[in-house]
Length: 418
Image 1: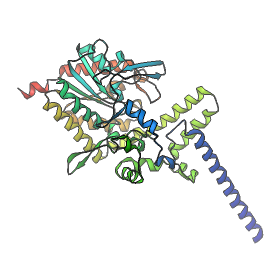
Image 2 (image 1 turned 90 degrees about the vertical axis):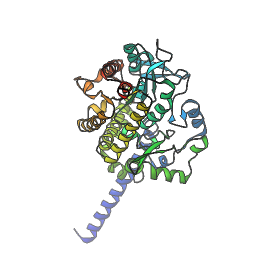
Image 3 (image 1 turned 120 degrees about the vertical axis):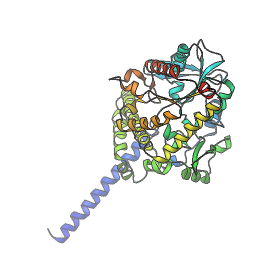
Image 4 (image 1 turned 135 degrees about the vertical axis):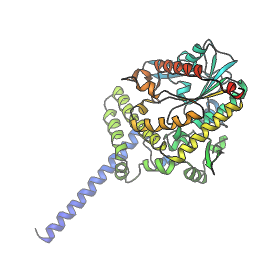
């Protein structure tokens, strides 16, 4: 081949490559526009400064906002959840706890704080583990669980509510992912699209636990300035480690390839199901969401091997135990695994080892081994739009385990006054 022919061949190859890359860029640009409204975990540069409308802020203040903890359900609120087996309902009583049928009113000897696995999403008021515990103990169990809470937020709420009740037992119910939630200030950087969820946090300063107030405490605070964003990016643990790595930006092909293990299955499930009807869309969304849940579980496992994260979580648990002892009630830490935790043996071993070390500070009830005994733990969970939560069967198991554990445990008050 002549030199001229070689030059033409090379030029043709380069033009073909550029054309192919251009078409691929166009494809991904259109795919992102198509899929992002259905799946907010596909984040782009616009998500660095998401638009938070005044209407959304007003609704959030009306239903959820709390200046102390970040958010919590308002007294008198009622709602429904759609599950794979049909709708369920919940109600929030005047004291701020979830309705406990037949055991509606104080006084109570047991209070429960924690996340959505304590609130018990996706089941009715008479199907939660705090309600089943009420039936075991024949007393009202005040359920102060709040969806998406970290242990740090649950601790703040416990410090607010325990003095009002003078309970004998205070339970802090968490999922293992709480270690990640305690490193977060804006949930959007860990749970993409959760743009209203700003929260207070804690940090270790010279081995001392220091409270850091939420970056958002008024309606006007939601109007984030460029400096506000810079401060959040610098102070939130997940911005550089997770959020910025998952941003899809031009050139899209390189962004997607950089996180191929995450992006490839997400695009595959969403695209292949998009054109196959409503049932297929639901299947594709669920499969893509499973990828997100596996990623979160991987993050959780890594944080239970990170000394700084473990030290922070241990200090928060110590503060809870000390506060309970000061108020003469027994502190109990209840660990409830998510389905993705049970599928990750490395992560499961890491968090179980950590919580065993907490056993010398307070009573720890880890449901992992109980759930893992089931060859097929699927009946212990029920699916919903925000991921699986414990089913009626799972909640019964939890209540029985808690009842047996606190029945066998000598009380803090008895030990203190012995």
